[in-house]
Image 1 (cartoon, rainbow, N blue to C red):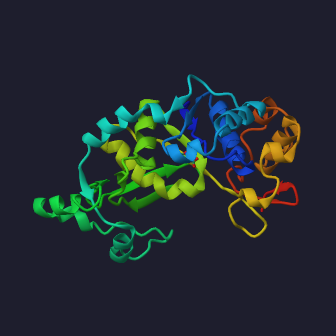
Image 2 (spheres, rainbow, N blue to C red; image 1 turned 90 degrees about the vertical axis):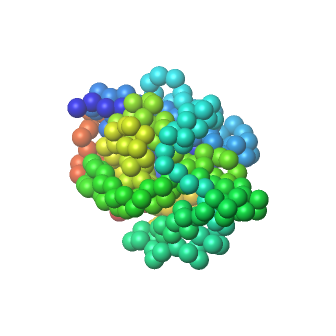
Length: 297
Ligand code: GLU
């Protein structure tokens, strides 16, 4: 069955090998299924985006140089604020005035993944209490999730179930939150298959719940293992030559490195990589970057 997937970079730092590997995996899964691959620029954090001038253009050029072509127009989150506003207005929400410290103090025990759900402190405020707190600090807007439980289907992780917490939809400074914007856009763009890094697996149930509340159908997910450094930490700039520019390899060689790390063999074009699909069962596993090489653990 075919589907629409997307790649959704935040234009705040250059794409490193781990980002590019996830993009390649998504492109391959999509093209192998005859699907549509969309591109979305997640540029809501205006301060960070402004501080990273030129990054968006380099991200897109890097993807194109590897042959990862996308369909349709670019979607840019900073141009879609009205959609996010309408979505928030249609959801059950409440204002939250908690400081970081208050949230930490009231939070319940951590879940397996270390996540500590918001305790719901502001859910029961009276009108008078709300008025008083509004005078102190601007409110964030939270989803009134009513402790719903949500199951998602991941191509590799199988079924994942988790309680949905009262996630922030609009931050105190007025910025629409990542979880909200992603869901509104995925529905509007007809995205029904989401390939991305498995650091976001724990966000999937709450995003699926939001999707349902906004009248959409939750996507199928394909979370891909991350690239780590030799000590097992997520790959970062400080790990050396991690971007295409740093590596200085011809695009075909960079593609070969990424394909080999997905278990596809050293393919030098995306056509060759597609012909090598479906990959072996470790297609979605992470990889380790050390000494300029990328290996599967
Ligand atoms: N913009 C997010 C990132 O760069 C990805 C969000 C998503 O794929 O849902 O990590």
